[in-house]
Amino acid sequence: MVLVLKYNLKLKIMGTTVGNILLSYDIKNKHNDVKEGLQELGYLDHFNFKGETKIYYLPNTTLWHSKKSSNQAMSDLKSVCRNCNVTLEKGIVVKATEFVSI
Image 1 (tube, rainbow, N blue to C red):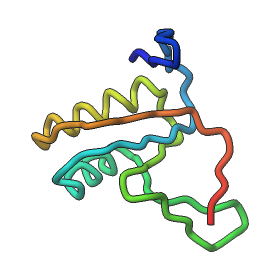
Image 2 (image 1 turned 30 degrees about the horizontal axis):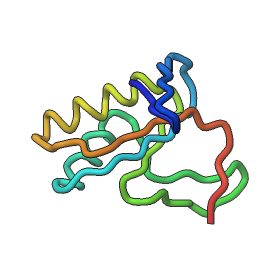
Image 3 (image 1 turned 90 degrees about the vertical axis):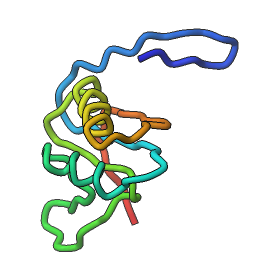
């Protein structure tokens, strides 16, 4: 994956660290199919804090996983979209070390 920043600088991102990742994507159709495909691979659309019973839901096309690298998650997303015959418009995966929600 290449990240293009202002002034046309290019950085190659190596997402090999396994841990909590946050995945967000844009597609035009088959939202439920893609989300269900990712959930079958262990991705979640919600979380809760230790000691709390309240469940926090992420935005519709945002999921997280506790044991994936950024590269693995992007590969999963591309594979699920391909299997669902969906064009992946945009996608981003980031290592997530803290979650804050409302």
